[in-house]
Image (cartoon, rainbow, N blue to C red):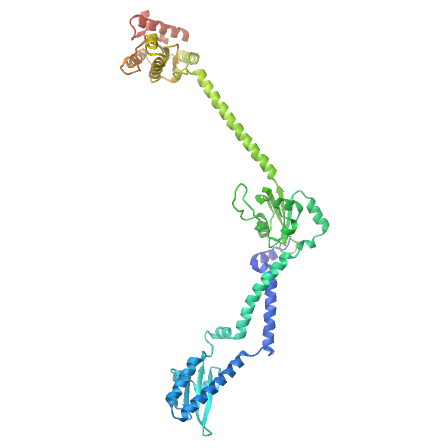
Amino acid sequence: MFDSSVKAEETNKPMWSRSPFVRLSLSLVMLACTILVALDLGGFVPSVEAAFAELRGVRAEALALRVVSAAERRDLTTVARELERAVDESDSLVTAGLRSRAGVLLTSTKGHAQDWNPRDAGEGAEGALIVPIQRGGQPWAQLELRYDAGGAGGFLGSLTQRPLVRIVGAFAFLAFLAYAFLLRRALRHLDPSTVIPPRVKATLDLMAEGVLLIDREECIILANEAFAQQSGLSPSRLTGRSISKLDWRVPGSLEPAQDLPWARALRESASQQGVALALPSQHGMRMLMVTSAPVGDGKGPVRGAIVTFDDITLLEDKSRQLEDALAELGKSRDEIQLHNDELRVLAKCDPLTGVSNRRSFMSHAESQFESASEVSADLAIIMVDIDHFKRVNDEYGHVIGDEVIQSVAQELLANSERDSVCRYGGEEFCLLLRDRSIEEVRTVAERMRRAIAADGFAAVPVTASFGISSWKSGTRDVVELIDRADQALYVSKDRGRDRVTHWDDLAG
């Protein structure tokens, strides 16, 4: 392991300062700028300041000749006009004035009297220039010229106004861009894999897993044949490319993958294992399990990383097929369960009315009978028979007859639970009531009888006869309880139908 302080120092550097082509570009730019400055100091570069000073002198002498010509004619108006024109035509000339030998300002441009300081010219400041004017061979006056010294903004401002500084700055910026571009392309096209021994390459090519060696900038140094097949790119095309620029996707999604494992390995100097990524190729989407480990020399910062790719595409396909098969199996199981439920319902229910059939009812009734016997609870049976039902079928047809049976069944269900209502025969029903006194049972039976006999109950007018028996009358089992209710029912039919008869009334 390398020293942690070195690692921390290297990690804290900005990415651009750690890039080799950036460092090379800066070095070349600094070298070129140093050469330019050395040439300037050695006098090999023409002095722009001297050229400007010479040009100012020439223009000042020309202006002095024009001023002398007008001054000899004592035409100070023309002198003032010449000075104004000189200021307007020059970018650097600020003010101008003509002063007599006695120190009297004969004429000047606006602001010259306030800005001019006679000591400036004497000190040799580059912003002031005095041109002596003679008349008759004797000193007569002096032409005072005030230039913009270029000192706005202090030392930095004056420095940036120097031509050499501006040239060097522009050259440094443009040269850096050019060097960086050329070096980046040159370094990318160099083959870094030549430093890897052939036997190492051959060994890596024999591996079934894809293997990449990358540098700190995530550029691929070496790619083995397995990864070339996984990505659909040859090793030569992969070398020099950024591994992160490949089209990595989130598995099962079209979204680009973020925070890739090799980037974390380089950033955190820690191995990253078992990261699933998807990579489109000419053979379709490849599913890869990625492991990345940082690589260093043990003395300094991380130099790169080794990345392995285990192709799990086939495994994922098989897993998906297994999931589909399990889903189909689950769907079939649910369908079978549904069919079994339907069969159980059909086995327990009468298909026409939806109430229990006779076999299911008998099982439920026996269970209720035993339970009621243990706790001495009330338990009663009501037998119901539709009066003259054969005549209904003969006169109105079986469709109407079925509707009548269904209507009676719904009325019985309204007064008891579904398991406690049974279609006992063709037009005969059996109803079990628990925890109700004999008076309550009679009331329920009378209510159902009146409801059936009421106008509009069914498609045709019908009535029904009822027979009741109670467990507390001394029955030994469900069969005897039902038999007594059936006997009471026939008594109701013999006595004119459309009535309720209790077996206890017959026994009394």
